Length: 224
Image 1 (cartoon, one colour):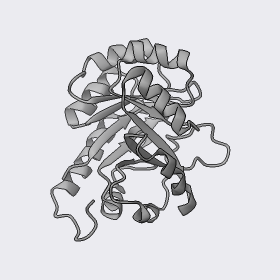
Image 2 (image 1 turned 120 degrees about the horizontal axis):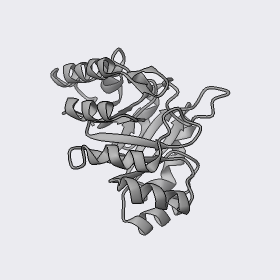
Image 3 (image 1 turned 90 degrees about the vertical axis):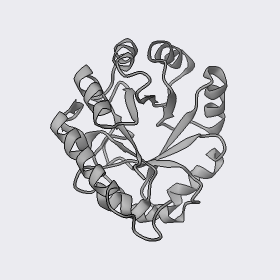
Image 4 (image 1 turned 180 degrees about the vertical axis):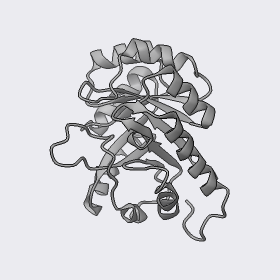
């Protein structure tokens, strides 16, 4: 079964159209000023309109307040709001009630104990995203191009629906999917020629690698 594929941090019409053409099920727009992938809500809305209905549109936020969310959601009209900061379960419930949108909650993972933070969000978040903890000195909660030990995810309840993120690329995606059986994958820096600059050839290579994995029989006992 082909996993959902989210291409995140999109900033140009060419990259948006190409990602969806190649099979992206989700496209992510990042609203975080410190990120090289940051985009203004009005431009993100224009880009999303090109592919609306062909892929799910994700607003990626980091501890955004109500005023920021009002602007983002008014322009982008997303299908999902992703929370990539220190938001509480109560904050997710508040935002879901305000806008009537599903929530994806991201967690940074380095060790087994990091996954215990998921428990209060079960039944609140509609999906999770597991990313690597940022390296020392990084101001970015994601998009750092580093991965974590995917074996840590073996302890998760099989009913926990998540996207796998963190350092994914064409060379390791087969191993990542074989190890985790993730039903969704999220990539940003792995298809960039420079921070924030999506490379169409790298997008092609990544989707080619995913398609190759999907065309092969799943290893016994690893599918979720």
